[in-house]
Image 1: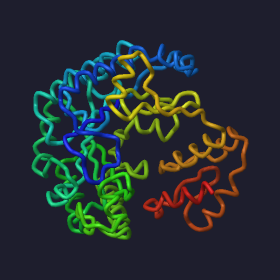
Image 2: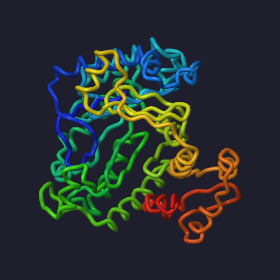
Image 3: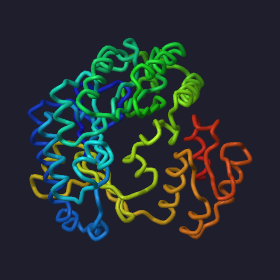
Image 4: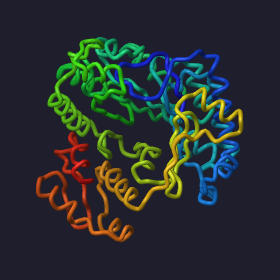
Length: 392
């Protein structure tokens, strides 16, 4: 479920999110509920032949992303989750849910939005995992990035979640923020040891025209501290430092950008990389079922209007070709450090892949051990370049 609302727009953000009045929250949550309750009817009316493929599917993970879903009143979160339970089969008992072994329900949150009443209400609603968009522990870096929280907010928020019963917490960090140094990056990694999150995601700063900071860099400007961004080599070094630090701290590196303590890998995100079916509800949400990919309208007002008119709010729809599906199989599968079963993919798609793999293996970009193919561990920081070569 997607909630595209924020308190402010971060300088590096290239997502379709916006700052709106809180009066918009309730109508939006109602529209998400309507999409959930009426999804089958809406798909059929739009001529999308996916309903049969959904029959008998059981919900085992829910991800409430953003934006900043933690801005919503807890009752809005509760109502959207209630719609999910009413509409779909649900994995596990109430006791399993509370222990985290039932449906994995993740809520994205910003530290400054956390209070005890919200945390207790989320837990009562079934939320058992919170993903924090920290990005940094350094106040100078946070200010430059346009973040609302400060380091102190992180240390205040985490105990509140623990006390509410939430035992699975994930931190996001960005390598490459303006003013970031090797010292401040190492300090951020050390701070993880103080708070002991179960999961950590590390992303390299993206420079593209979709964000204010990215556009400023591309245009050679100085706003948003654009001239204080670390070099690409420094970013790669930060990533490699994180690899070593998190490994030493007992985290399992299971996907290019993701580390987890044993048993705390993100069940929901693994579905994306394994190309398992999922449904997305809300503005900008994506879905993948039976070879169909579709995306809802990104504009929240257009999304709400479509649901009020009983229309499916889809703005993009694609039925994958075999070639497109194969490419997804390769680059999504190779994001996982366990790699891919090349023989299985060759059987499933009736192709030979040696001509793609062998040149990259000779360059040291891929490793091949029998049928197992994976990215070379030393090349994870340049994975995008490897994928480009693989798809040529």
